[in-house]
Amino acid sequence: MDKLNLLLAVFLLANLLLALWRVTRGPTPADRLLAALLFGTTGVALLLLLAHAGGGMGLVAGLVDVALVFALLAAITGTAFALRAWRREGEDDERS
Image (cartoon, rainbow, N blue to C red; front, side):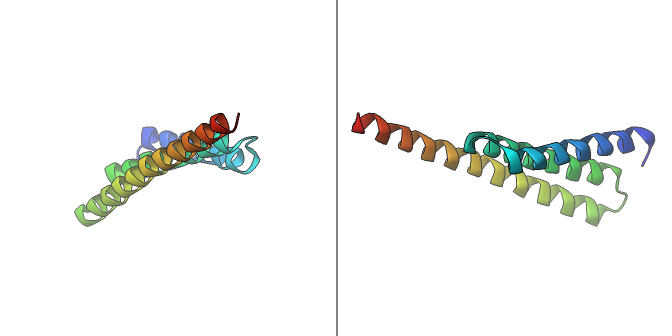
């Protein structure tokens, strides 16, 4: 790894630590979900950085595949949370 890749990796790891702290201490479930999505996005960035810095083709293809799965799971999680929150908000409106 050259210096730029190492600097980017340290920055992304610091973001992971901050996101983990926000997931544990988030005041609302929405804050926790946004931090978890940040966690997933940063994990994808780290995997792609490692794939770029790695030399072997087998390792690169595997890391890119795992990064794509993480990105897909993050999108599904965000959508599911939004639908759940939207339904809950609609139920509160009907009760009023």
